[in-house]
Image 1 (cartoon, rainbow, N blue to C red):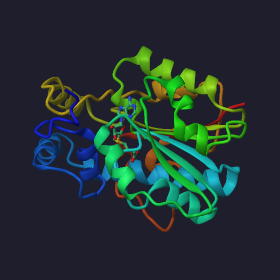
Image 2 (tube, protein in one colour):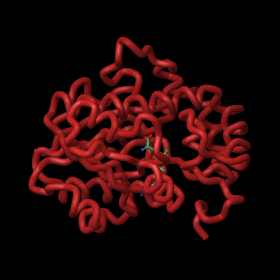
Image 3 (tube, rainbow, N blue to C red):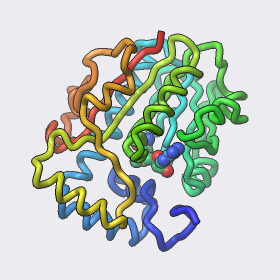
Amino acid sequence: MSESRDVSALNTSRRYNEWVGGKDHTSVERESTKTVLTVLPNMLAAAKEGRAVVMRAVGDLVAECGIRQILDVGAGQPMKPNVHEVAQRIDPSCRVVYVDNDPLVAVHHRGTVMSRPEGRAEFQDGDLLNVDELFTGDQVKEVFDLGRPVAVLLASVLHLIEDDDVAYASVRRLRELLPPGSYLVIVHGTFDTLPEETRQAVRRLLATGKHGSYKARSRAEIERFVEGLELREPGVVSSVEWRPDPAKPPQASVADAMCYAAVAKLP
Ligand SMILES: C[S@@+](CC[C@H](N)C(=O)[O-])C[C@H]1O[C@@H](n2cnc3c(N)ncnc32)[C@H](O)[C@@H]1O
């Protein structure tokens, strides 16, 4: 049984929802969060910064790069603001397809996500491990013009794929299938900024198998996902350093953010 169908099991998308300030979580996730915070006391601020950089990247892609189609893979529970709200504030005709492999996420999106009438915001069941199927899904086919660029958000999802071969193969296949001029947005957790003692404590916690899967990657490992692509300035940097918003000072330092962000353009 998948973790999302067994209500007594930890659901990592609900736990993430708690971390970014949402209300959709249960005592199971809250207990896990308490334990995680004993090892990583700044985890909530780090998650919020990971979410904030996605919103900045979406705003930048729509306002500055002409993007009007966004595929959000590993979208998570609907949040305020949602990706389509940020995009449609700049251009109401923006079209967004949210994808997640968690059936609970699907239920919440289908019940609550409302697009501006000029654009679209739909949900499609899908898995980053089956990239080909993402592009043959009904919503992607109906909502997007696949002759035009699409920005694909891979935000806090690649680090949930522990097997390197699988993670790199999925991104490689995405790059092959996307229209020319498309963009990849990658937000990915790292232990680069943690002292060795903390890394070991996190590894011990993950080894219990009670807190979900997680594969932190180094900056060099994250750069491999966008190798050969044109990086949007400032390149692969800490989430808090990617085009920070002067009006919203970061809630975490580079060390505490534990995350890299990158926006890359396909040829
Ligand atoms: C940590 S949340 C990130 C939410 C959102 N992208 C953000 O950055 O705010 C990760 C989401 O990815 C989903 N997910 C995990 N593995 C996935 C996969 N292989 N394919 C699609 N979604 C996946 C989880 O169900 C969860 O909702």
